[in-house]
Length: 429
Image 1 (cartoon, one colour):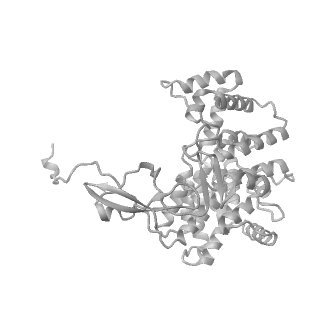
Image 2 (tube, one colour):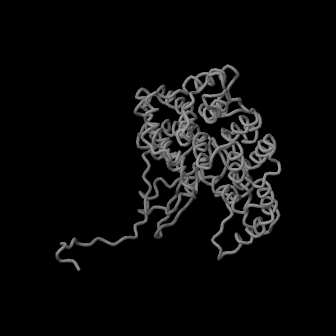
Image 3 (spheres, helix red, strand yellow):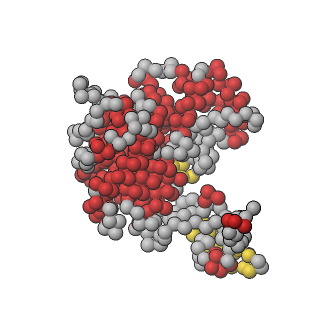
């Protein structure tokens, strides 16, 4: 017998089915609640509402668990590479050696963008934020690649998916180069995905660029850690845009726009600015006390997470990666890292942090790492968007192929004026 839940509305009792997933909490299916009772549920931010069924990512915030298609994030980041994670996201299984080679080849051969895109960049002010450029350029891809915008065609959906995964690093590097006044660097097919991106960002025509393998591996790991994170704000935006039948390039552009918000993708930039404001380890206690003071507006960035109520599993990997990068640069005594370490130790021992479960999250470390690698802070969210593209695409494709999916249409609790009569302007006031 299937499980159900009983709800009483105005003395009327109805039964609603309960759905159970592979792992995680069960959900009450309220799809017919309004039809049977005339009422809706009220859930600001949809924090207690499942908007879809998904096979892609699972998070257990209390246990500090993140799984991509069932695989722990720690194992993927430690043993795999980003394109292997992309394959897993798109197809549901880890690739065989031949599948991996074929996938890498196809992505690599799609990294070039239409040459007219070069002129597109010239329409922006030189000091335009790279995320503004990314929103526009990714949305504009649909104007250049008409042969992959028919969402009813499975082959076109896959071509669009491959194109976005491949071209996102090229567009991101172009946005960076444009912002600093350097010429664009074209991709090089002999390089792997992340090494290619580093070269496009930091190479100049007057000399050969040498790939630092420590940097390439660190950035590849950062991409894996950010590839997907269940139904967060930007992913939900992509799904909502896609539910209308919008082309995939427009949907991903919508996700990038949402990610730009400081409460979402800009958190690592905010954490870095906070560490720079604190400055030295001896000032950490002063700022911790400020954070505890309810009357002080100061907030510690990079601690706690809306989902994780335990240590963010990505933060442990990111901490190790940060040490590797700073060690390669000879920055083991970096002041920002010393401040970060001091803050972390306090957070893991202080009763205030423990009681409120304010553990260091991935943003706490990633900002330091990206800065050490040479990326300016306004590029941090662009890198996040680059990594998250595959998760958005996988979620979008899953939604398109879901026969139960409908166009998104949240309800509301109206608290405005009741119906009233129009008064001609000469009779008002």
